[in-house]
Length: 395
Image (cartoon, rainbow, N blue to C red; front, side):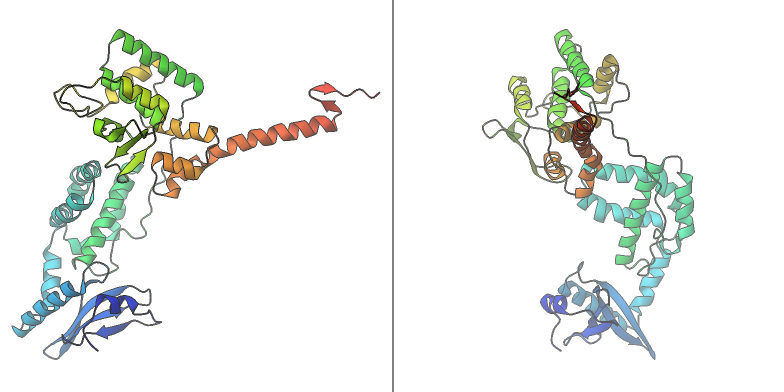
Protein backbone atom coordinates (compact mmCIF):
# COMPACT_ATOMS: atom_id res chain seq x y z
CA UNK A 1 0.00 0.00 0.00
CA UNK A 2 1.22 3.51 -0.77
CA UNK A 3 1.33 6.61 1.37
CA UNK A 4 -1.81 7.22 3.42
CA UNK A 5 -3.65 10.33 2.20
CA UNK A 6 -6.62 12.19 3.63
CA UNK A 7 -8.81 11.21 0.67
CA UNK A 8 -7.86 7.54 0.95
CA UNK A 9 -8.52 7.53 4.72
CA UNK A 10 -11.91 9.20 4.36
CA UNK A 11 -12.96 6.67 1.73
CA UNK A 12 -12.07 3.65 3.90
CA UNK A 13 -15.33 1.83 4.82
CA UNK A 14 -16.24 0.57 8.27
CA UNK A 15 -16.52 -3.20 8.76
CA UNK A 16 -17.90 -5.51 11.42
CA UNK A 17 -14.46 -5.71 13.04
CA UNK A 18 -11.79 -3.05 13.41
CA UNK A 19 -8.92 -3.23 10.93
CA UNK A 20 -5.77 -1.24 10.17
CA UNK A 21 -4.69 0.40 6.92
CA UNK A 22 -0.89 0.49 6.86
CA UNK A 23 1.22 3.26 5.40
CA UNK A 24 3.62 2.20 2.67
CA UNK A 25 6.39 4.62 3.67
CA UNK A 26 6.69 4.48 7.46
CA UNK A 27 6.86 1.02 9.07
CA UNK A 28 4.23 0.46 11.74
CA UNK A 29 2.29 3.62 10.92
CA UNK A 30 -1.36 3.22 9.97
CA UNK A 31 -5.01 4.06 10.54
CA UNK A 32 -7.34 1.87 12.59
CA UNK A 33 -10.89 1.89 11.20
CA UNK A 34 -13.45 1.06 13.90
CA UNK A 35 -16.88 -0.50 13.28
CA UNK A 36 -18.41 2.83 14.36
CA UNK A 37 -16.58 4.50 11.39
CA UNK A 38 -14.26 6.31 13.81
CA UNK A 39 -10.68 6.32 12.55
CA UNK A 40 -7.51 6.64 14.59
CA UNK A 41 -3.87 7.03 13.60
CA UNK A 42 -1.75 4.32 15.24
CA UNK A 43 1.89 3.28 15.50
CA UNK A 44 2.82 -0.36 16.02
CA UNK A 45 6.36 -1.13 17.16
CA UNK A 46 8.44 -3.63 19.14
CA UNK A 47 10.40 -3.08 22.36
CA UNK A 48 12.52 -6.19 22.86
CA UNK A 49 10.15 -9.08 22.31
CA UNK A 50 7.09 -7.04 23.19
CA UNK A 51 4.82 -5.65 20.45
CA UNK A 52 2.95 -2.46 21.31
CA UNK A 53 0.37 -0.30 19.53
CA UNK A 54 -0.15 3.32 20.50
CA UNK A 55 -2.87 5.73 19.40
CA UNK A 56 -1.69 9.00 17.88
CA UNK A 57 -5.06 10.76 17.57
CA UNK A 58 -8.35 10.85 15.66
CA UNK A 59 -8.18 11.42 11.91
CA UNK A 60 -10.84 14.14 12.17
CA UNK A 61 -8.63 16.07 14.59
CA UNK A 62 -5.07 15.76 13.27
CA UNK A 63 -3.84 15.65 9.68
CA UNK A 64 -2.00 12.71 8.12
CA UNK A 65 1.18 14.82 7.87
CA UNK A 66 1.07 15.68 11.57
CA UNK A 67 0.42 12.06 12.53
CA UNK A 68 3.26 10.98 10.25
CA UNK A 69 5.62 13.42 12.00
CA UNK A 70 4.56 12.07 15.39
CA UNK A 71 5.21 8.51 14.21
CA UNK A 72 8.70 9.40 12.96
CA UNK A 73 9.55 11.10 16.28
CA UNK A 74 8.39 8.03 18.25
CA UNK A 75 10.35 5.68 16.01
CA UNK A 76 13.46 7.77 16.65
CA UNK A 77 12.87 7.40 20.40
CA UNK A 78 12.55 3.63 19.96
CA UNK A 79 15.94 3.59 18.25
CA UNK A 80 17.31 5.07 21.52
CA UNK A 81 15.70 2.17 23.44
CA UNK A 82 12.92 4.39 24.81
CA UNK A 83 9.34 3.18 24.89
CA UNK A 84 7.13 6.14 23.81
CA UNK A 85 3.97 4.50 25.13
CA UNK A 86 5.58 3.98 28.54
CA UNK A 87 6.75 7.62 28.51
CA UNK A 88 3.20 8.72 27.78
CA UNK A 89 1.79 6.58 30.57
CA UNK A 90 4.34 7.96 33.05
CA UNK A 91 3.47 11.52 32.04
CA UNK A 92 -0.24 10.75 32.23
CA UNK A 93 0.09 9.36 35.73
CA UNK A 94 2.08 12.36 36.93
CA UNK A 95 -0.08 15.14 35.41
CA UNK A 96 -2.35 16.84 37.92
CA UNK A 97 -5.86 18.03 37.19
CA UNK A 98 -4.71 21.62 37.78
CA UNK A 99 -2.14 21.20 35.00
CA UNK A 100 -4.87 19.83 32.74
CA UNK A 101 -6.96 22.91 33.55
CA UNK A 102 -4.09 25.18 32.52
CA UNK A 103 -3.78 23.43 29.18
CA UNK A 104 -7.58 23.41 28.78
CA UNK A 105 -7.60 27.18 29.28
CA UNK A 106 -4.75 27.82 26.85
CA UNK A 107 -5.84 25.45 24.07
CA UNK A 108 -9.64 25.45 24.34
CA UNK A 109 -11.10 28.30 26.40
CA UNK A 110 -8.82 31.02 25.02
CA UNK A 111 -9.06 29.73 21.44
CA UNK A 112 -12.62 28.52 20.91
CA UNK A 113 -14.91 30.34 23.37
CA UNK A 114 -16.40 33.81 23.26
CA UNK A 115 -15.35 36.20 26.06
CA UNK A 116 -18.50 35.83 28.20
CA UNK A 117 -18.54 32.04 27.89
CA UNK A 118 -14.81 31.93 28.62
CA UNK A 119 -15.38 33.99 31.76
CA UNK A 120 -18.11 31.56 32.90
CA UNK A 121 -15.80 28.57 32.36
CA UNK A 122 -12.95 30.19 34.31
CA UNK A 123 -15.30 31.21 37.12
CA UNK A 124 -16.59 27.64 37.47
CA UNK A 125 -13.05 26.26 37.46
CA UNK A 126 -11.80 28.72 40.08
CA UNK A 127 -14.87 28.62 42.33
CA UNK A 128 -15.74 24.92 42.36
CA UNK A 129 -13.87 22.51 40.10
CA UNK A 130 -10.23 23.21 40.98
CA UNK A 131 -10.78 23.33 44.78
CA UNK A 132 -12.34 19.86 44.49
CA UNK A 133 -10.07 18.14 41.94
CA UNK A 134 -7.02 20.38 41.51
CA UNK A 135 -4.45 18.13 43.18
CA UNK A 136 -5.74 14.83 41.83
CA UNK A 137 -3.76 13.06 39.08
CA UNK A 138 -5.74 13.31 35.85
CA UNK A 139 -5.48 9.57 35.23
CA UNK A 140 -6.93 8.71 38.66
CA UNK A 141 -10.09 10.85 38.68
CA UNK A 142 -12.97 8.40 38.96
CA UNK A 143 -16.69 8.45 38.22
CA UNK A 144 -17.36 8.20 41.95
CA UNK A 145 -15.48 11.47 42.51
CA UNK A 146 -17.45 13.21 39.76
CA UNK A 147 -20.66 11.93 41.35
CA UNK A 148 -19.59 13.34 44.72
CA UNK A 149 -18.77 16.68 43.09
CA UNK A 150 -22.22 16.77 41.47
CA UNK A 151 -23.90 15.94 44.78
CA UNK A 152 -22.00 18.73 46.54
CA UNK A 153 -23.76 21.32 44.35
CA UNK A 154 -27.19 19.69 44.38
CA UNK A 155 -28.75 22.88 45.80
CA UNK A 156 -27.68 24.84 42.71
CA UNK A 157 -28.59 22.41 39.91
CA UNK A 158 -27.98 24.85 37.05
CA UNK A 159 -24.42 25.52 38.24
CA UNK A 160 -23.82 21.82 38.91
CA UNK A 161 -24.88 20.95 35.37
CA UNK A 162 -22.67 23.65 33.83
CA UNK A 163 -19.68 22.35 35.81
CA UNK A 164 -20.44 18.79 34.73
CA UNK A 165 -20.45 19.89 31.08
CA UNK A 166 -17.08 21.62 31.53
CA UNK A 167 -15.60 18.54 33.21
CA UNK A 168 -16.87 16.26 30.46
CA UNK A 169 -15.24 18.45 27.82
CA UNK A 170 -11.98 18.51 29.77
CA UNK A 171 -11.81 14.73 30.05
CA UNK A 172 -12.72 14.28 26.38
CA UNK A 173 -9.74 16.46 25.51
CA UNK A 174 -7.59 14.59 28.04
CA UNK A 175 -8.31 11.40 26.07
CA UNK A 176 -7.52 13.16 22.80
CA UNK A 177 -4.23 14.45 24.23
CA UNK A 178 -3.28 10.97 25.42
CA UNK A 179 -3.62 11.81 29.12
CA UNK A 180 -6.30 9.21 29.77
CA UNK A 181 -7.22 5.98 27.95
CA UNK A 182 -9.87 6.20 25.23
CA UNK A 183 -13.42 5.84 26.55
CA UNK A 184 -12.45 6.57 30.16
CA UNK A 185 -14.30 9.89 30.63
CA UNK A 186 -15.50 9.68 34.28
CA UNK A 187 -18.44 12.01 33.50
CA UNK A 188 -20.12 9.34 31.37
CA UNK A 189 -23.43 8.10 32.81
CA UNK A 190 -23.51 10.92 35.39
CA UNK A 191 -26.99 12.37 35.04
CA UNK A 192 -27.61 16.08 35.04
CA UNK A 193 -30.00 17.60 37.54
CA UNK A 194 -33.42 18.55 36.28
CA UNK A 195 -33.64 22.29 35.67
CA UNK A 196 -36.92 24.09 36.08
CA UNK A 197 -37.46 26.18 32.98
CA UNK A 198 -38.56 29.71 33.84
CA UNK A 199 -40.38 31.54 31.10
CA UNK A 200 -41.91 34.87 32.06
CA UNK A 201 -43.78 36.88 29.46
CA UNK A 202 -45.06 40.39 29.88
CA UNK A 203 -48.76 40.82 29.14
CA UNK A 204 -50.07 43.75 27.12
CA UNK A 205 -51.07 45.48 30.37
CA UNK A 206 -47.62 44.92 31.86
CA UNK A 207 -45.95 46.24 28.73
CA UNK A 208 -48.05 49.40 29.05
CA UNK A 209 -46.78 49.80 32.61
CA UNK A 210 -43.18 49.45 31.48
CA UNK A 211 -43.80 51.95 28.68
CA UNK A 212 -45.26 54.46 31.15
CA UNK A 213 -42.30 54.04 33.52
CA UNK A 214 -39.79 54.53 30.70
CA UNK A 215 -41.58 57.72 29.58
CA UNK A 216 -41.68 59.05 33.14
CA UNK A 217 -37.98 58.32 33.69
CA UNK A 218 -37.08 60.01 30.40
CA UNK A 219 -39.08 63.09 31.37
CA UNK A 220 -37.64 63.19 34.88
CA UNK A 221 -34.09 62.51 33.64
CA UNK A 222 -33.41 60.13 36.53
CA UNK A 223 -31.59 57.57 34.37
CA UNK A 224 -28.99 57.73 31.63
CA UNK A 225 -30.78 58.25 28.29
CA UNK A 226 -28.68 55.54 26.67
CA UNK A 227 -29.77 53.01 29.32
CA UNK A 228 -33.46 53.68 28.64
CA UNK A 229 -32.77 53.43 24.91
CA UNK A 230 -31.22 50.01 25.56
CA UNK A 231 -34.36 48.83 27.39
CA UNK A 232 -36.58 49.95 24.52
CA UNK A 233 -34.36 48.23 21.94
CA UNK A 234 -34.44 45.00 23.95
CA UNK A 235 -38.24 45.12 23.95
CA UNK A 236 -38.59 45.97 20.25
CA UNK A 237 -35.95 43.60 18.84
CA UNK A 238 -35.81 40.53 21.09
CA UNK A 239 -32.01 40.80 20.97
CA UNK A 240 -29.74 39.49 23.68
CA UNK A 241 -28.49 42.07 26.17
CA UNK A 242 -24.88 42.03 24.97
CA UNK A 243 -25.97 42.43 21.35
CA UNK A 244 -27.61 45.74 22.26
CA UNK A 245 -24.92 46.97 24.66
CA UNK A 246 -22.20 46.42 22.02
CA UNK A 247 -24.20 47.83 19.10
CA UNK A 248 -22.24 50.42 17.13
CA UNK A 249 -23.68 53.09 14.84
CA UNK A 250 -21.77 51.55 11.96
CA UNK A 251 -23.86 48.39 12.45
CA UNK A 252 -27.11 50.31 11.89
CA UNK A 253 -28.27 50.48 8.26
CA UNK A 254 -31.27 52.84 8.19
CA UNK A 255 -31.69 52.52 4.42
CA UNK A 256 -32.02 48.74 4.52
CA UNK A 257 -33.71 48.79 7.93
CA UNK A 258 -31.36 46.24 9.48
CA UNK A 259 -28.72 45.84 12.17
CA UNK A 260 -25.62 44.09 10.84
CA UNK A 261 -24.11 42.49 13.95
CA UNK A 262 -20.55 41.29 13.24
CA UNK A 263 -20.58 39.03 16.29
CA UNK A 264 -23.16 37.51 18.62
CA UNK A 265 -23.62 34.36 20.66
CA UNK A 266 -24.26 32.49 17.41
CA UNK A 267 -21.82 34.44 15.24
CA UNK A 268 -22.44 37.23 12.75
CA UNK A 269 -26.12 37.87 12.04
CA UNK A 270 -28.57 40.36 10.58
CA UNK A 271 -31.33 41.71 12.83
CA UNK A 272 -34.53 43.14 11.36
CA UNK A 273 -35.56 45.56 14.10
CA UNK A 274 -38.84 46.93 12.77
CA UNK A 275 -39.96 50.54 12.52
CA UNK A 276 -40.45 51.23 16.29
CA UNK A 277 -36.85 50.23 17.01
CA UNK A 278 -35.56 52.25 14.06
CA UNK A 279 -37.48 55.27 15.35
CA UNK A 280 -35.77 54.86 18.73
CA UNK A 281 -32.40 54.76 16.99
CA UNK A 282 -33.16 57.80 14.83
CA UNK A 283 -33.98 59.91 17.86
CA UNK A 284 -31.11 58.59 20.01
CA UNK A 285 -28.34 61.02 20.84
CA UNK A 286 -24.91 60.37 19.33
CA UNK A 287 -21.90 61.41 21.36
CA UNK A 288 -19.01 62.90 19.36
CA UNK A 289 -16.19 60.41 19.04
CA UNK A 290 -18.21 57.59 20.65
CA UNK A 291 -19.06 54.74 18.22
CA UNK A 292 -21.50 53.01 20.60
CA UNK A 293 -25.28 53.40 20.47
CA UNK A 294 -25.62 52.66 24.20
CA UNK A 295 -22.86 54.95 25.40
CA UNK A 296 -21.40 54.67 28.90
CA UNK A 297 -20.35 57.15 31.55
CA UNK A 298 -16.71 57.24 30.49
CA UNK A 299 -15.68 58.75 27.13
CA UNK A 300 -15.77 56.43 24.13
CA UNK A 301 -17.24 53.50 26.08
CA UNK A 302 -20.53 51.61 26.11
CA UNK A 303 -22.57 50.48 29.09
CA UNK A 304 -21.31 47.18 30.46
CA UNK A 305 -24.46 46.28 32.36
CA UNK A 306 -28.12 47.17 32.68
CA UNK A 307 -29.16 45.23 35.77
CA UNK A 308 -29.38 48.13 38.23
CA UNK A 309 -31.29 50.28 35.76
CA UNK A 310 -33.70 47.46 34.97
CA UNK A 311 -34.26 46.77 38.67
CA UNK A 312 -35.37 50.39 39.13
CA UNK A 313 -37.64 50.21 36.06
CA UNK A 314 -39.34 46.99 37.11
CA UNK A 315 -39.70 48.12 40.75
CA UNK A 316 -41.45 51.29 39.65
CA UNK A 317 -43.72 49.24 37.39
CA UNK A 318 -44.43 46.72 40.18
CA UNK A 319 -42.91 43.86 38.20
CA UNK A 320 -40.12 42.69 40.49
CA UNK A 321 -40.14 39.11 39.14
CA UNK A 322 -39.30 40.14 35.56
CA UNK A 323 -35.69 39.62 34.42
CA UNK A 324 -33.99 41.43 31.56
CA UNK A 325 -33.93 38.20 29.55
CA UNK A 326 -37.71 37.95 29.93
CA UNK A 327 -37.98 40.84 27.47
CA UNK A 328 -36.61 38.44 24.86
CA UNK A 329 -39.21 35.85 25.87
CA UNK A 330 -41.88 38.54 25.59
CA UNK A 331 -40.78 39.34 22.03
CA UNK A 332 -41.09 35.64 21.15
CA UNK A 333 -44.55 35.36 22.72
CA UNK A 334 -45.69 38.43 20.78
CA UNK A 335 -44.44 36.79 17.58
CA UNK A 336 -46.46 33.66 18.38
CA UNK A 337 -49.55 35.75 19.10
CA UNK A 338 -49.07 37.47 15.73
CA UNK A 339 -49.31 34.06 14.04
CA UNK A 340 -45.61 33.55 13.25
CA UNK A 341 -44.44 29.95 13.05
CA UNK A 342 -41.59 28.53 15.10
CA UNK A 343 -39.09 28.52 12.18
CA UNK A 344 -39.68 32.24 11.62
CA UNK A 345 -39.41 32.96 15.36
CA UNK A 346 -36.10 31.08 15.41
CA UNK A 347 -34.82 33.32 12.61
CA UNK A 348 -36.04 36.47 14.38
CA UNK A 349 -34.26 35.48 17.59
CA UNK A 350 -31.12 34.21 15.86
CA UNK A 351 -31.43 30.61 17.08
CA UNK A 352 -29.18 28.04 15.41
CA UNK A 353 -30.86 25.03 17.04
CA UNK A 354 -34.50 24.05 16.50
CA UNK A 355 -34.64 22.80 20.10
CA UNK A 356 -33.96 26.30 21.39
CA UNK A 357 -37.06 27.69 19.66
CA UNK A 358 -39.14 24.65 20.61
CA UNK A 359 -39.62 26.04 24.12
CA UNK A 360 -42.26 28.34 22.62
CA UNK A 361 -44.21 25.50 21.00
CA UNK A 362 -46.84 25.49 23.73
CA UNK A 363 -47.58 29.16 23.06
CA UNK A 364 -48.21 28.42 19.40
CA UNK A 365 -51.07 26.16 20.49
CA UNK A 366 -52.96 29.01 22.21
CA UNK A 367 -54.42 30.60 19.05
CA UNK A 368 -55.37 27.12 17.80
CA UNK A 369 -57.12 26.39 21.10
CA UNK A 370 -58.99 29.68 20.89
CA UNK A 371 -60.09 28.93 17.32
CA UNK A 372 -61.16 25.41 18.31
CA UNK A 373 -63.13 26.82 21.23
CA UNK A 374 -64.91 29.30 18.95
CA UNK A 375 -65.78 26.68 16.33
CA UNK A 376 -66.97 24.09 18.85
CA UNK A 377 -69.05 26.72 20.68
CA UNK A 378 -70.75 27.68 17.41
CA UNK A 379 -71.55 24.05 16.69
CA UNK A 380 -72.82 23.52 20.25
CA UNK A 381 -75.10 26.54 19.98
CA UNK A 382 -76.54 25.15 16.75
CA UNK A 383 -77.17 21.81 18.41
CA UNK A 384 -79.01 23.58 21.23
CA UNK A 385 -81.13 25.49 18.73
CA UNK A 386 -79.27 28.81 19.20
CA UNK A 387 -77.80 31.10 16.63
CA UNK A 388 -75.52 34.08 17.27
CA UNK A 389 -76.29 33.81 20.96
CA UNK A 390 -80.09 33.90 20.47
CA UNK A 391 -82.69 31.15 20.41
CA UNK A 392 -83.98 30.15 16.96
CA UNK A 393 -87.80 30.63 16.74
CA UNK A 394 -89.60 28.20 14.49
CA UNK A 395 -92.01 29.90 12.12
